[in-house]
Amino acid sequence: MKQNSNLYYFNPTCEYAVGNGSPNWQPNQLLRRMETDLDILPMFFASSNDFVLVGHLPSKTHLEKLGRLGIEIPGFIQERDAFTNINIQTREWKGLKPWGWSPAAHKLLHPFKNNCSEDFKDLPVSNWNPGYRELYSKKFSLGILTRMLDEFPHNNFIPKDFKAVVCANREEVETLISKWGKVMVKAPWSSSGRGLQPITKTPVHPKVWEKLLAIIKDQGYVMVEPLLDKKLDIAFQFKAGKQRISFVGISNFTADPKGRYIGNNLNGLPDDMDPELVEFAEFVPQIVVGPLIRVLETSEIAHSYDGFFGVDALIYEDENGNLKINPCLEINLRYNMGLLSVLLESYLLPGKKGIYRTWFEPGRMYLDFKNQMEERHPVRLNGQRLESGFLSLTDPGAESRFGAYILI
Image 1 (cartoon, one colour):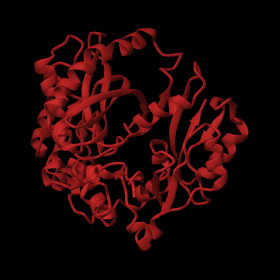
Image 2 (cartoon, rainbow, N blue to C red):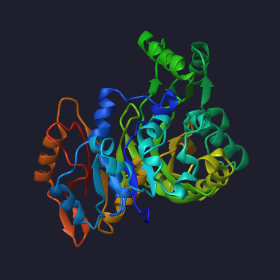
Image 3 (tube, rainbow, N blue to C red):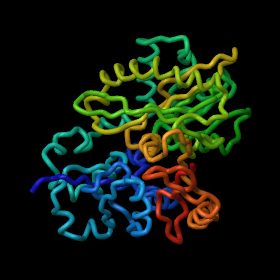
Image 4 (cartoon, rainbow, N blue to C red):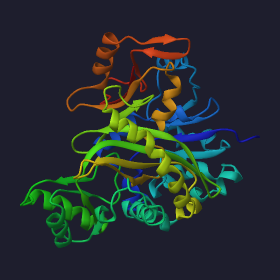
């Protein structure tokens, strides 16, 4: 029997799992709820032959609505069935495709591994190597940035003395606060803008020190960088395979004041954005993509990873009013929302701009928000393309606290 089905699984907290290192790691209650509420999102990368592991099966009505856009609808398997139904476990699989790999993801998907294709078993991601842990850290990303600045210097790149610094104790953090004034402190293993702590005034509050020292105790160190005058977040999307790196596209995203991911712009930058910033953003790929591929192809990623990944970059204004870019702020070695947004652009009517957003409001359910937005912004199709309106990508139940949608 030909193995032509991949099995997808949504675990965006994989960096935390990698940092922890235990196959038994579990996200906290809120993050687990987020994973469950958004767990059909891998379907947009899947084909009709594939399957997605989910907590609850999406409704036929929701899938029919997405199907009208020409989206291929895969099969869905409930987790409770996947790990108890022998017919599912003994099915032959082409490969396993979690959102991101970690020791915990390998343990969870282990029942399906024996029946995967030999092509999958030959991939570096088919088994976890403890040495992979460092590839997911912000310290590894800093190493890629350092090589970029050394081997491909450019006047528009961030100066070397503004790079992040690894700090293993409070004194080292305090030294950088004295040097830069305002800083951003980051956990080495975290994702979606979590694990960030801006410091904008001194003395630093005791509760902040408590948080930072807890990260150092848990993960071994923190990354400290100057707090820059950010103008735009962008991400370069790539795919690794057979020791080659190929460029997929560019996404630009928005974050809240604390740096946590909110969503992406679709089909270009907003029309009301500063023209000088737009011009710089459109120029940036010329000086970043080629050098980044050359550095990445001679890094451990090319040898030890297979699949999609994103490289976050930061456009900022320096003290002289000049636009600069940090071309490798961090590497997300997994599927990511920016990659999803690049794919979603193909479902929009050409020339139409929109936003892709993930949603969460404490104390409010996503179903209420969805119903309200569908009433205010009814979706309108032109053929199989979105022309205007609100389209929920996730199928909310009565208890869903998170969601994802497109608004044109």
